[in-house]
Image (cartoon, rainbow, N blue to C red):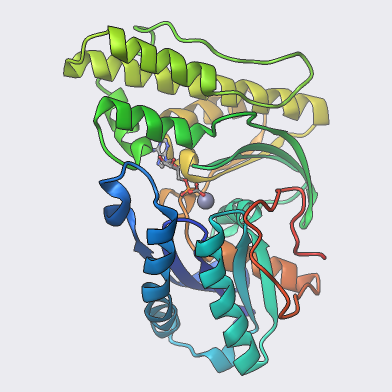
Amino acid sequence: MGQLVLGIETSCDETAAAVVSGGRVVASNVIASQAGLHRRYGGVVPELASRRHLESILPVVDRALHEAGTGLAALDGIAVTYGPGLAGALLVGVSVAKSLCLATGCPLIGVNHLEGHLYANFLGSGPEPSFPAVCLVVSGGHTDLVYVEDHGRLILEGMTRDDAAGEVFDKLARAMGLGYPGGPLIDALSREGDAYAVPLPRSYLEPGTFDFSFSGLKTACLLHLEKGGRTRQELADLAASFQRAVADVLVTRTVALCRAREVRRVLVAGGVAANTLLRSELARAGAAGGWELFIPSLEYCTDNAAMIASCGAYARRRGVSHGLHLNAMANLPLGRSGCDE
Ligand code: KG4
Ligand code: ZN
């Protein structure tokens, strides 16, 4: 059996723990979702999230170890998300991981949540991704284009200047009265709609940048919603047109970075990578551009601790470990993985 790493993830509204062997084989993957707690507010309430993490974390870690048929003494490392995310929420996971490492002498590995998302592509028995690669990280809080030279060597090439893609899915779904989280609901409703029914803007910003902007698209959707009708068909048309606009921008920018870096390998990650249209459009662009394309299976797209454990395992192979001074960093940027500090 390969190295056994326990992953812990509490950056937002999922309390998660997982055991991964050899960086790739998921021995357990436990997620206690708080979605029900936050649904009535239409978004995550940070203080409620922290309190719920506190209640859930130890049982979740226990279950992850139990389901993997292992115990703390058998672990080769404990990997924990230490940023970016909600400060109070991150602190719960970081404190628990540090305590477990202090008690067992196990190496502690701090993982950047966004880098962790990339490692969802390493889970399972498919071909192992290699680098260099272009990576698109699209989550509720981030929309980043990254050039990854090798494990632990990430260059942030572009990011959103305002809203993240997932955030706009959530905000539009709330305005439409669909519920939370909005991404899967808009994805499902879009299937009934016409993606070209509502003309919507696509922001490509100035030439040469790989940054994104989604606030103009969000405003256009909200204005349309104020003026337009709200029959199911009208909402479906808006959802489909919005989803098409987001996918167009994300795919166009990814293609551009592949060309600029002369790379034909693309890894996609983050909750929005679960989007049906984005997945099929990336597959199409990948076939046209001759890319090797990696998209995680649906269960590993959204927040989980298996991806954190995998990222930690690869970092551990490079000899990375953190001292007990590791702290939560709410605004940890992607380029700074922290793993190699
Ligand atoms: O990566 P993630 O689980 O959490 C963060 O790190 O933010 O991403 C959550 C985001 C939410 O905004 C959610 O609406 C979006 O991913 N999402 C989707 C889909 N499934 C989840 N967005 C579009 N289509 C989906 N099928
Ligand atoms: Zn995430």
